[in-house]
Length: 441
View 1 (cartoon, helix red, strand yellow):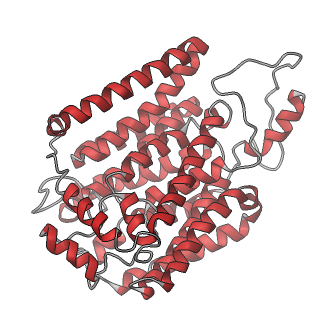
View 2 (cartoon, one colour; view 1 turned 30 degrees about the horizontal axis):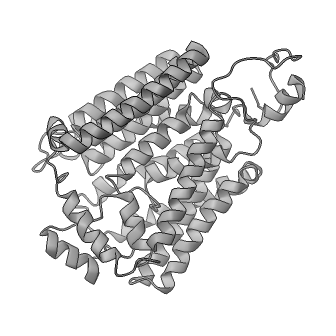
View 3 (tube, one colour; view 1 turned 135 degrees about the horizontal axis):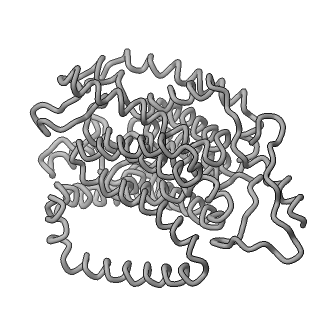
């Protein structure tokens, strides 16, 4: 195949000049998925408020309109649609054995619609377009959070528990922390993929880092360091050639083995360094109780989003045994195990693994074009899933961004290049950059 043919094949993967109105629509849905602004203002006590559900109707309408308008982009990522569809079908089918069928059915609708938006996001915003969009949306939300902190401190700052810590336009500091992690990773990827926008990318990165520090969330800080570290590490390794790649892989294996040994021997000491107790703030007690409850329905679970209801007998048994109002398993995979059993948990793990492997194979071509955003965010998502309930969640930014990364991994129009290779095959010349018609650049 000639490089002209490769350039023609790879043309659909180049960033599209998305209309400004469409970017604003996507930004609105993204803001809704973070849980920003509306909830803290209309229901500051975090109580059940039917009015809040009405605010999701415009978001669902916008999502439906975007998916219908850009259906050709969605067709291009049909393998991801199949994978996400199978998981959604399992969630829907669980209503037949759910301990709370009404909640399962309602949450399935939210899962299906928002997963559709995530697929649109990954398919429509190709290359650097997605991290650029996320960075700018997080910039606006971060700036609004700073305004709330100083102008409306009763909303922007915690009082009582976590007194004095910033929470911005969200209910909890951890919510703001995880949103700013997504913004920081996106800014780093934007910086690597589009250095001409260096000032904007660095401004977003600085603001997101500041807000993560203001939350004092150790989990968010670790995720931010991991995500940005992946982006910059890959960029450095690529500049060093094959020798540095091999040395880096060996060093990574050695450090991973050493880290695992230190963790098994001195986990209590290491947790103490970041202000955590050996039970991870009671999480280990919850996990033991969750595993015991899961053993009662190991294969198919208790039904999607049905386990942690206020009237749930098995959930109240866990709350009684742990002596506090447990809202979730605080572990993404254990929550899936409770809701959809081993079938759901293994299925999710296989789909996540598919996305990781696909992006590793595309690390030099599409990965470079997007500033390695997908790999960085997948690393953060996997780490986050071990302490937070972010797997197969209906209205949650981490899961939406994972599905977007999956869509990018399954994009059939993308050419797979040799990892970490910049060599030109014998008999071929470098392709010339050009501006293609129909809004492609």
